[in-house]
Image (tube, rainbow, N blue to C red; front, side):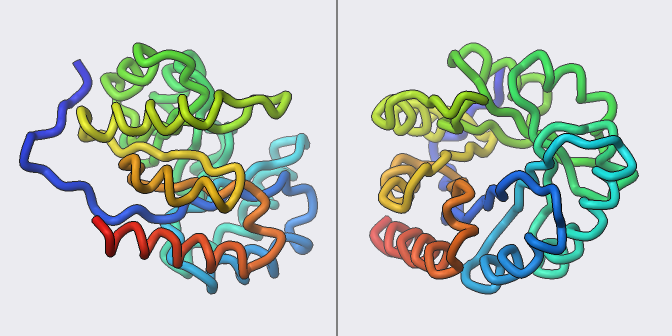
Length: 215
């Protein structure tokens, strides 16, 4: 069974998990990423890579990884577990339990393995049992669709109440940040909207601080 949280345990204050737009030109993303990282406390950056050959992907990651890592943020790749080590990333985020299980041997024990696109509670529990470092709820699928926000916060609240493995709640807009944090998310993922203007990332950080103060 997935590790269950002791009754007396308290989760730490939620932090930001920043999601980038698809990166094809790392030079075009560097300034926006640096600005967002300077604006708020960011725990991790999920780098989404536009399709290319492995060498091009690795070069993009190597160009952007120091921007995140020098600020103390983990650099995660959206998929591509096979290049994580070669590119100097900290881990990979896998979509779905099958992709997660297939990547485990490549990533563990040295790298972070996160899992999203978890349709059912059972899938989330399977990911945790298999060794996921976190699970994510609420991110859009390839067509941009996602569950109703009420269902996302309900899933986050259920997980936070019962399990020790951290969970990430995906915020598709600024007004979703506080409800996800209040529901118990350990991290709040900011969609690529937060990369368009560093002020949005700063405001998300302020809203998380308010939730922390009120807790």
